[in-house]
Image (spheres, rainbow, N blue to C red):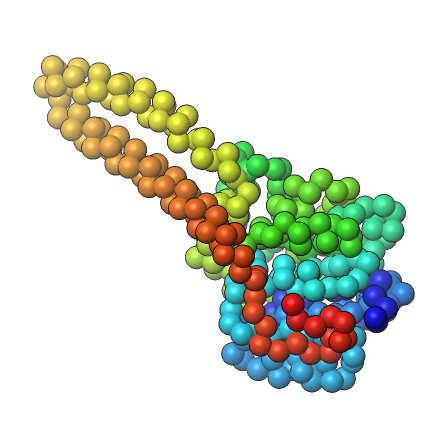
Length: 315
C-alpha cells in the first residue's frame, strides 16, 4: 500500500483550460512550502475546451498530480464532493480552479488544522459581482439560516480544509446530492473560520449564473432544510387570517360602492397558489432525493483515472 500524503488538494474543473496550468503550479508551490507531502486531485466534469488534455500533460509531468475524468457533467455538488472522498491525505483542501479561492491561503488552513481545527472554512468578506447575483446569494443565505436544519456560514463556499476523520465520516452518509458546506457544519466537528476578500477570476467565465445558483440552492434546500415541510402549515394559518381580512375589506368596499375588492381577492388567491406551488416543488425535491437514496447510485461515473496508485483504483 502506498503511503498517504499529509495534504490532498482537490480542484474541480469544467472548461478551465485557461486556468488549470496556473492553478496547479500555484498550489504545488504552496503545498511544498507548508506540507511534508501532498497530492493534487483534478476532477473534470466533461469539459469541451481542452482542459482534459492539459490535465493529462500535468499528470505526466508530476506524479503527485492525479486526475479523474467524469463520463459526463455531474454538476457542481456531486463532482467536487466525489473527488474529496477519493483523496487520501491526512487533511483535504477543496478549492476552485479559477483563483477566486487564493492558493496563498493554504498555509493558514494548515496552521489552523495543526492547531486543532478539524474543519477550516474560508469566509468571503467581499466579492465583486453583479447586483442580481449578490442579492441572490444574500437572501439565499438568510433563507437557509432561517429554515435550514443546521446553521450555515454566510459567505462560505466550501473553500477550506477538512480533516481525514471529517471526510471519512461524511463519505459514509451516502448523500445522493451532497450539499457539502452544510454537511460540514452539521457534522459538528471543530470549526475555524478564516475571513478573506475574494478576488475576481483569473481568466475565463464563471459558470455560476442565476440559473445555476438557483438549481444549487434548490438541491441544497431539499437536502438540508427538512423543517420547511412544516412551514406550509404555519403559512396556511397566516394565509387564512389574511383571506378573512381581505373578505371583510371586500364586503366593506362593496357596501361603499368601491371597485377594488375583486382585485384584492384575485391577488390573495394568486399569492396562495404561489406559496403552494413553491412548497410542492420543495416536497418534490425531497421525494426525488429519497428515490436517489433507494437507488444507491454513485456520485459520478469515471471515464478515466490518471496517476492514482493501484490500491486506490476507481470504486
